[in-house]
Image (tube, rainbow, N blue to C red; front, top):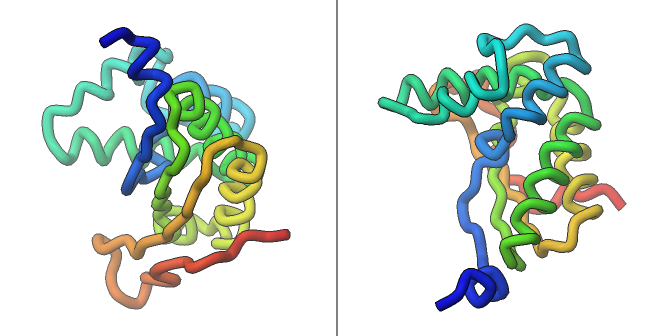
Length: 154
């Protein structure tokens, strides 16, 4: 099999937490745009941090990345970067999860997250279904939402 053959096959990506798809370059750009300090000095430091040794090292980089997501534009840029990247790999269906509580817990309104993600989706060529899920680490009173059936803005 050739790389072209594999690239051209239609693919589906299932159960992807979109915050975890944040690329180091976009993390730095959003941190700068939003004036958010991140615990990495360079893109290379972020890439090195992606060599997880356990769940905690994964969560550390996951939450550092989530912290730079502040505005509807940020969430749009995240979604658009993801969908543009997977479209090049032949992904025709992506089932995306996002963690509303990760953002509402920081004071980012749910509708900012959803509108931004769906704006990125609408600009992409992939067929996508977005599903929210509660963040189980948070105490029950902090949980909001759950599954989002369809909150796409026209």
